[in-house]
Image (cartoon, rainbow, N blue to C red; front, side):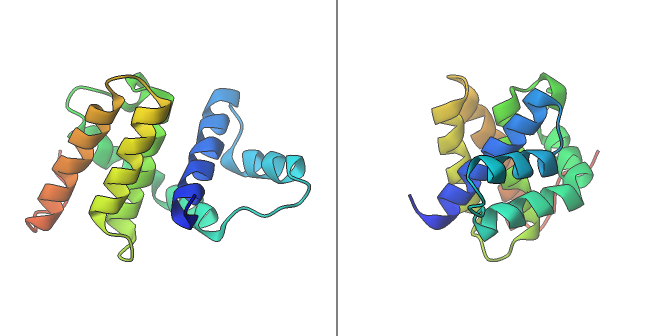
Length: 141
């Protein structure tokens, strides 16, 4: 598995675990490292988790504006966290092409979530990317 793809999988694993258990991402990272006997997480996993820690409120706001009547708490946990990861990459990482962020998260949604998740995630990210590429920035409330 390629480097950033694996890093995204691990970030999703940590974010999912945090939501399911009610623990923080930091606690989940510690538990993961303890289970792996000190093996480190890929740097890109840590970068993604840090991006989300810093920008979670803004990222969630963008997702909710694009998700048309689907509040974040109503979304499947996997979809919600994949959208967070991709939106953070799209908004705050110039070194990752927008299409790559979207494509990777759509594929993970298809693999790990509901039968409709791939289309749902793709629709939201596609709309966001189209607005950004047209120079409009994220949709406003």
